[in-house]
Length: 437
Ligand code: SF4
Ligand code: SF4
Image (tube, rainbow, N blue to C red; front, side, top):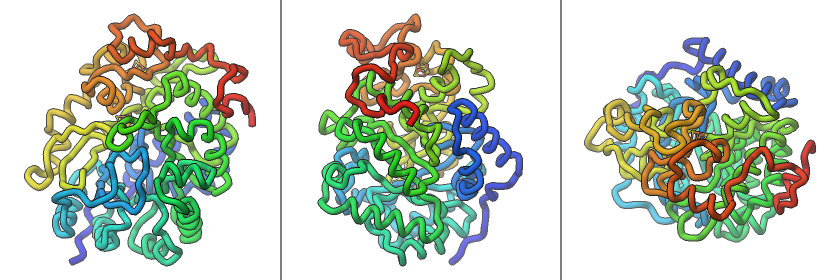
């Protein structure tokens, strides 16, 4: 049975859209984004995706749930935090999925929903679930490897209610993408999915996972996203979780700092908005770059940094609720506790919402509100999701009680002073040598 519309539209109240426009303008000012007018004209499609957003943050900042509908997947990506392959035990059934969607729609802050996996399109009831969620009034984004999207499926997804298709693309070179994704020929099928998405008129988002294997190729991937006319690029910095922890795939803190700086430079002439993810220091970096006096008060209104538990909840295939896909800690299960109760009252979410609980440098930092450090990275490196982010390059000199992980990197001189990272430095990342391109 088709449910009644419950969720408010993205333009209700209109001040929400105003806030999003102001955040985009402030961001454009900080990075000197030449493509903003073009993006605003063509990027109207982003409004449903940003439904309810009150600023910019990691994994976007519409306050929203992400539902990992299955761990089943037709690829075998090296970095997969969900260790995708076979379906996991006790995945929510279609009826339980609809109950979950009812619970999601009951939380008034949630206006959009991301469906992910595994590969969400291998779930046989995916169209039925999308139609149900859409009838509730939720805007739907789907995060997929793109290989199963034919022109016909793209049209069906759009008709069912999908507004944003986020497709994983980890290289500009087919052989490297196939290597990272574990299946020969998948680059070509992903590109077919990308073209089908554009032809069907949905927003194209490209999701890249930055890791040791593709670090050198990030400039080419961003160029490709630009050529493909993607509206959004989420540049995930690999957090060692799931299969991503089985090999040493994470880039070094020094490379990470250089990447943030080079992404800001690249943004100037790049059409898609590039949002570094698992990288909340980016926003703090933007406010203080080029010797500017950081306007922390203003910037904190627009930039929210880490959204774990504050702007995001992540529902696992069995109904467990996490604060982020990179913090494998359950705050409860929707089979036993309503999602709204977990979202509002669980200890995990309440603790993450109050940044006074952060430890180490993150606990005494000027940028706590707009950054907060990546809680997933803190957890992966220390087992404590409140610990300081060991990859912070903003406060490397802050009077601090450095964590063991940070001390390890500092000892090896891998923590950079960002002011000394220059485009002429002899570094293997070609993005550094292409300033102004
Ligand atoms: S824990 Fe990391 S990946 Fe998750 S929302 Fe926070 S910054 Fe983003
Ligand atoms: S110390 Fe923590 S909150 Fe401050 S900039 Fe670094 S990571 Fe962000």
